[in-house]
Amino acid sequence: MIYLDNNATTRVAPEVLDAMQPYLSEFFGNPSSAHALGREMKRVVEHSREQVASLIGASETSEIVFTSCGSESDNWAIRGVLATQPNKKHIVTTQVEHEAVRNVCRLLEQEGYEVTWLGVDGNGELNLDELRSALRPDTALVSIMLANNETGVLFPVEDIGRIVKEKSEAVFHVDGVQAVGKIPIDLKSTAVDLFALSGHKLHAPQGIGGLYIRKDLSLPSFIIGGAQEQGRRAGTSAVPNIVGLGAACQLALDDNHHELIERLRNRLEDEILANIANARLNGAADRSKRLPNTSNISFEYVDGQNILMHLDQEGVCVSTGSACHSTTHESSPTLRAMNVPFTAAQGSIRFSLGRYNTEADIDTTLRVLPAIIEKLAAMSPYDKELAALR
Amino acid sequence: MGSDTTETQRTQRLHREAADHFLNPRNVGDADEPSFAGRAASLVCGAHVRFSIQVDEAQKVSQARFRAAGCHVLVAAASMLTEQVAGLTTAEAATLDVADSSCAALARDALLGAIREYSNAARDDWAGDEALICTCFFVSERTIEREINSLGLTTVTEVTRACNAGGGCGSCHQLIQEILATNDLPR
Image (cartoon, rainbow over the protein chains, first blue to last red):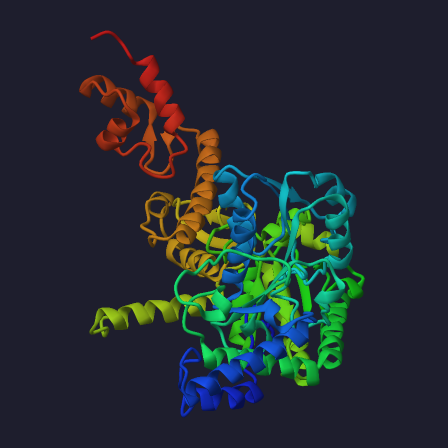
């Protein structure tokens, strides 16, 4: 199998599994317990917290709270920020956020909040002047992602943070789920107040996330119960998963494979765009503005779901932005916001690479893909449009 | 075919057949001229399919071809439909039962479009003494009028039930409606 779907989820790294193993067997205690076993669990949870804090450049370890997933972190951040500012009813976010932000903001609109949805240009980039003019005295929250999950386009959160703090008193939340472990992050040098991350995107298991809460900020609890996580998030700590997240962060710090991943991604992208007539890149052509592992390419006038199934037959795993594939039957909101034509959005494929990909994976993908696209193009009812591209 | 002993085996066989049609679609392209074509597209899933047919002197589909930009289910459904309709009369083809899925329905809609194009052309070319209305079931205007007047029919559905007219591709529904209007005499 050739796994090019690392933005969906990643394989648990062997180093991560090794670190977790003892906490799935002999070290089974509850970190809230006072006995020696409990104390060992507490120790390892705090060690993991340090590893997470260090990967994202938190200024203090206590700024990290463990959650169950990235979506919980986003939900908690957004709802929490609004609860602490009951008189402010305005939110600024973008049209290309992950559902964990977008759908919460949609709900908030129904609940009486006013939401400014910042658009993006054809490259998937924000216009910071639009952000400037969107900020108001009653803006409670600005929620903007660091890296887009579909295109890999990066938003300049340092600049955004500066503008938010200059022009308003809003809290700045960043969905960092897709970026953590893929690019260097140093939150203490930014104005980011809240930052969501998810373990399974960086080779930790599924079911563990984290929320960075800047030390001078206090959020009401989202999950109510015991006093775990310094009373901020109830629920017995998922110690094996927390250890896994810590180990994954350590791995990303020590040996991140970024150069290999970027080289493979560049080769894949360059050769597809050069050799397939109806291929076009979605997202900034300037690669410094994208994650090093992601390439979102549209194969115009053919269907992405169909490409995906053909690649699946060859053992190659990818994702698509085709409306057919999505459970909501909408073509990708990110590509729509970028004004990608419908017939291109329908044929979009996201290749997202990871640390276990090899040159051979890319060789195979580049060998099988052109024949698939050719077969589907020959079948397409858009025969005239395709002929014009040749 | 009859060797499936359980429902599960039957389902698995259908899945294998569909998978084969997806990977090796039959009859891709355009029917040889003179041909008749229909298109269907879905705003829900974004798929687009084109069906083209050739019809022989006996009004049977002698060639069926398709093109599709859509998911694997649509391609399999369209491919299977090209095989199913080959050799059928346009009336049989237009009334074929298709699987209960939106993809199969989309392929069928494109086929119906192609049959309607054929029917409209056949109606225009018709050189008989009486005007031909339903080309699928070969029903003339005079027959339809007779049924309307003898049975006191008032809707297209009633006309179809009485003499089959309008029971195929449906391209003549508007014409039947007009005949109903002109024969709407006080009784």
